Image (cartoon, rainbow, N blue to C red; front, side, top):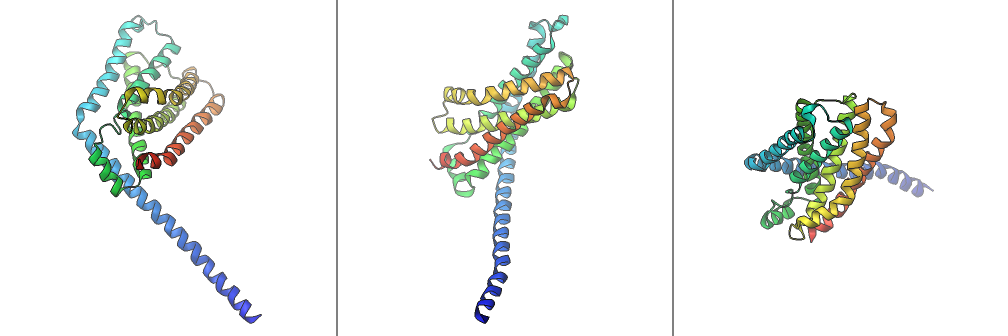
Length: 253
């Protein structure tokens, strides 16, 4: 009995230490991953700053698309309806996001990818790409919103709901297009493949974002859009988790 009681006491003493060791190991793993992600994001920003022509071209696309819309669809005469404003805005943001995110893995040479393979985990690489592309897409979306407001007017009645929808839409576009860009890069950067693979994922996100922004334009209560916001958030979570789980297998190939 004494030996059994001493053994139980010893095991009870070791149990918290084992749990503490596992917790420390998990915290260290998260800290190391976040360190890799921050370095990779800094690398993306540095490359983008060096290659300013890419960002400038996208910004020029947004401004010119809004101006052409202003001249061609009757907005100059005040004939632009609210549903048309909403649809045109999201179409322009979608194509801007495609042009911005499509180069995520295209600009990475094979030698640089091999270097990333040796110094960083694939989870850190895909998360850094998604975070950076989300920030870039959100900047383009806010710029487009500002240009739309100046040139075509601002009919949005609920700014908070519209901006929340803008953030969720940017995350969804970035996560799905980043993953598809990685797949297309393994297939010889086939642009047709990227368009085909991204279509089934982008369309639900786009339709949900258009419906939520329509409610924001009409000034409806948040409760009307609550289910749509949760659906958009769920789609973003599914796409993000899928990219996190499947990208390591793609990266090793």
